[in-house]
Image (cartoon, rainbow, N blue to C red; front, side, top):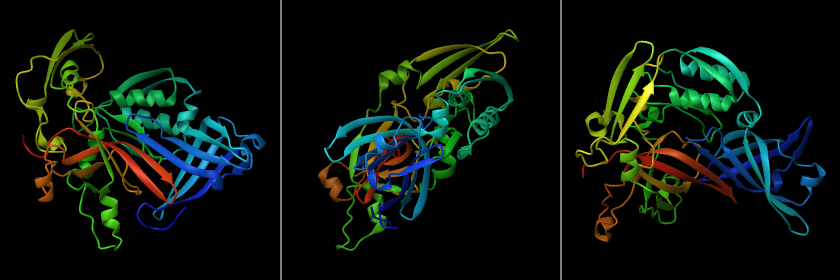
Length: 395
């Protein structure tokens, strides 16, 4: 496996299975690696293809629950993973060796499979989440964004991961009526934040622009920048699910919030077009044509301690209602889920494509919602799911 800083280069520095005080070094047996991460998952998942000519699986033996420590050098940057083996699958006998896949999740997620707790907390949801996180794991975290208000909650015999996931789904941003997510990124860092927080970091300056069918001719001279930005494969996902958008209130919705304590009722109305503010979206124009759709969905809630706001009505910025694409690019250690990237997609018309015209419907800024880092041979590739909730140009 190649090392160095060339485009997409990586080196597996070490891979060790650990149980108690014993360790088995299987670095030379790892043939392929896949690291999956997503903003909807509370753990990364790793799949490691092992070609075992030393019969480690029987001699050690490898078992579910073993620690699996991996260190990878990606273009000169070191990435460390501490995982737990949850499954050994695809076992096959090759006469002189055996081949199988080790399926792994994070240490924190593994503990959540068997640890439960009941406890009362008072405070902002982000502070409660961080207390739980630091009590049950020493794994690293990235962003734990501040949330609005202070509440008393009782965790009813839940796992730490489930408790923090629930807190995230109910936490509201201090700057806008949006809900949080709890996820582990591909660097192994845990995050507690709204995906829309990426607007603050990347809207005006996306860290990467990826181009499809770009003219990358360099007369045979290697060009790292062009190699990193080139999309080798583009797939369009299910997009503009109008039936779902209307049914679930993405465009128009209403909530009747009844306070049992105060014996009052608050009516909240959500309208995608009336509330559209280009400062709160990736691109400056709405995706859907403005017309009178009527009331899409009506919600009822009875709350005595949570303040009413639009966060319960506003649908997530990254859903099947929106534009979804999947791109494959050369791997690098900078791009991760929860970021914003710019995608340049050419006009599908041959004449327009030759003139360098862009497809204004699909070109624009996207959230990175999921990623698979695929390590094989001398190169790592990234397969990224990207979602866009607004348009670059008015249509």
